[in-house]
Image 1 (tube, rainbow, N blue to C red):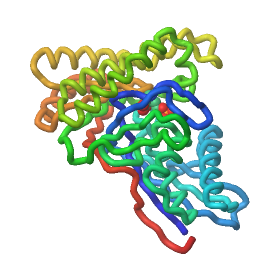
Image 2: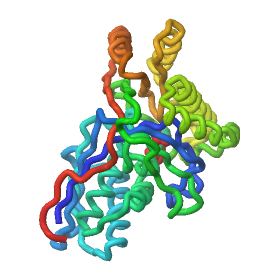
Image 3: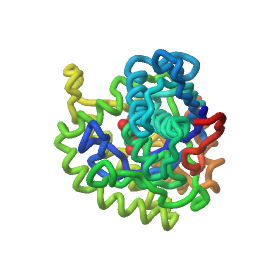
Image 4: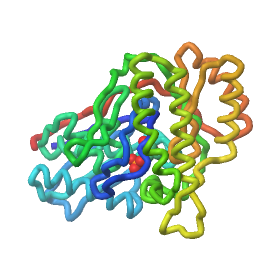
Length: 336
Ligand code: PMV
């Protein structure tokens, strides 16, 4: 069987930063996100006993060694589930640049999990698919269910999964992602997760995150952008405070992890000024310089108009999203 699946990346309002179990990608805390419609990864998988080994192409070329090995490890998980030995051919494409703070690994492992399990003749429940995707890249589990999604911290492999909190049409909000071009990050999120416990602020973050999870869940269910926005901004600051004060073991020359660019801070300050002037717009950041602006549809044109000025000063790409569906099958053919 050849199966193709697609998935959107997701943007966390409460972040996953730090792990309880690095092998299973069990998170130190729960997290909440929304799927972003503006960008998508599409992946096709076919298991073929005639192949000598797994053949992987991402965006029309073979991936780097680390990515290759992560994809092969994920295919091994699917083969173990299905009792298959055959190598696979995997072709994946993103319609957006990687490593700029739009979590391409999330959409990639969500789409790969769905395409590979179907190609192997398996039909997993949404929960089992989220658990599988989590093992590829933690945040990928949140790209499996639709709309606004919570990843439950859980106790073990079976109980740490993602489920939808609200569907796509629950809230007519928009995310404008302001991505700086040609800025490759020096520290991957995997290195960031591992370094996080070395920060003296990490424990303080974990002690306060349950309260933020409750507030963000309530804000989403009540469509309260101000409550959501303030919490999302604090969460971004909390992630970056931990990152800046944590030590990457393999990079002793770095005193801490700085993901921000000058433009990131400039835009944050503009957002606060815009809000002081009455425009309800908020921001969040992931492990990169990209600033994600949150607003209701009513204010989208005004937010974009204000960004024109900013885009003249910095080389940025704007991507507008609405809440999006979870991972879905795009095509299937042949027998398993
Ligand atoms: O799934 P990972 O290991 O790439 O971690 C993603 C971490 C953040 O994007 C920074 C936060 C999050 O919750 O998505």
